[in-house]
Structures are given as C-alpha cells and as structure tokens.
Amino acid sequence: MPAGSYSVEALTTEELAPGERADFWTERIGSYQSRMGFRYADSDDFRGRTVRQRTDTYQLVKYRSDEVEYTRTARQTRQDPDEDYRLLLPVRGEIVLWQDGEEARLTPGTGALVTFASPFQCLQSDGIDAFILTIPAREVDGRLNNRSPVASGLNLATGLGRIVGSMLTGLHEEREHLTDPEFNAVSDRVVELVCMLAAGDDRPDAPGQLGEVEAMVRRHVREHAADPNLTGTAVARALGWSLRQIQLALQKAGTTPRELIREERLRLVRDRLLCQECEHMTITDLAYSAGFSSASALSTAFRRRYGVSPREMRQSIR
Image 1 (cartoon, rainbow, N blue to C red):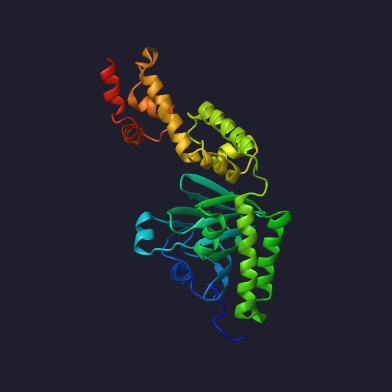
Image 2: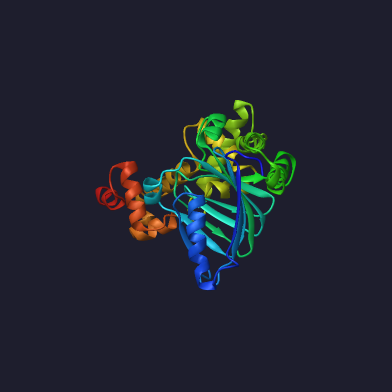
C-alpha cells in the first residue's frame, strides 16, 4: 500500500470468544469515533466487522454488525467535543436516527448528514451493512453557510445521490491502491455533492415560492399541532417536500420546524385556558391533548413563552 498518512485497517469479532465480542467492539469503534454509549441486543454473542480507511482529513468506515443502539449524550459532547459531521449510508438494513427533535429513518437508497456536536440516538438493525464517512465541519459549514444537525432524506438512489454511493463504493473497493491525495480528492468530491443534496437542488428559488411553502407549512402545523408525532420530517412527508426545503422556507421567516411546532402547541394550550368550555381539563389533560410529553414539559415551555405557568394563567382568568 502507498506510504503516507493514508491507512487501511480491518477488524472482526469472529476470532474472539462470544462473551468478549461486545466489549471489543465498544473499545475499537469508540476509538474510531468520539465518545458514545453502546447498547447491544445480544451482548453475549455479538458479531461485527469493519474496514477503516483514513487520512489526516477524512475517514471512511464500511461495517457490518448485529443490532446495536449508539447514543451520544449532552455530557459526552462536552467531555469529548467533536464538531465534525458523519455521512451515514446504509447498504443493507435500516438505521433510525433521532437528533434535535427530528427522526431520520434510513434504508438503502437514502442517507443522512449528522453532526457529533449534538446529542443523538442511532438504532441500527440486525445485519446492518453501511458506510460512515467522517467529514471536517469546515467542509460542510463553509458550503452550506449554516449548521444542519440532521440533513435527512438524502436521495441516494438516483442522480447525484447515486453518484455519491458509487464513489464511496469505489473508495472501499480500491482501498489497497490509493494514496493520500487520491483518497482526499475523491472524498472532497463526495462532500461537494452531499452539500448540494443537503442544500436541496429542488428547493424553490423565487422568494414568492418560499413564502408559499412557509404558509402551507404553518397551516399544516396549526391543524396538526396536537399530534404528538408531529416533527419537521413528518410535515415534509405530508406535504411532499424535502425537510431541507421546509427548513429554508422557515429560516427565511426566522424560525425552524421545531420552534414553529412548539409555538403552535403553546398557542393551542393558551386558547384552551381562555376558553370556558375547557375549564374541566386539567393541566395534564391540556399537555397531552396539545402534543406535549408531560405536564412539566408544558409548564416549562409555557412559562418561558408567556412568563407564567398554565396554572397561574388559569387562576388569573378566574
């Protein structure tokens, strides 16, 4: 293999005793990525293998494994800071990712751009086969001019997305024949195409079109605010647009999908507090009926927005 910082490393759990495999995987994958939590569906006989390619700039890991749930907590982001992004592309199986109030469900032909600077949960199905490319934050933030914790729904089945998948497959297959400049050059092109996908080539260009998207998103969120499963991803799916498209429209208006959903839910609770016909509803009833996970979650958000708790507002009205 050519000399330089470029290196290739393969590992497998097959040569270890079944009871040692999960600990081995935790240690080695933890050294590949930043600090995370690992939860195994079967820690007594876990199976996994990886091929890791890296230079001083990029890292590409192709891996197969049994079911694992990876988590990165707020505490871990503070103790082990990592501003870089990861591009996730399943080749087989499913990856379900939760970050910043959004869910991304990835299957072959889709991908997501994720930051390790924010907490997340990542559940990977049994028999997962996937790529994960580590990308320096400067390569993404500079092109997109903003941070995007989860750019989900990247279409990798056709067009530019399919080219991205083919390039990563080529990097993996030619791993023993690459030099530092070659690996970095291909990775640069991959990042460029991914940023084009994340920005959304199909987004509306005219200000008037962005305004129309914003109006329809606001209408949909207001009508479905009480749905506890309402997220930016769910809104995008219901309206037939990409999440990035919706984010762009709301960004122009100075908000985000998550903030808009919270605002409409708080407005719904406030209106019900002012309505005599809703006096029989407890604060807990109001919380669940407006899509909040608990009464305490409602009270915290309500006080931050209106300066008083729901109970205090109700008492002042009475």
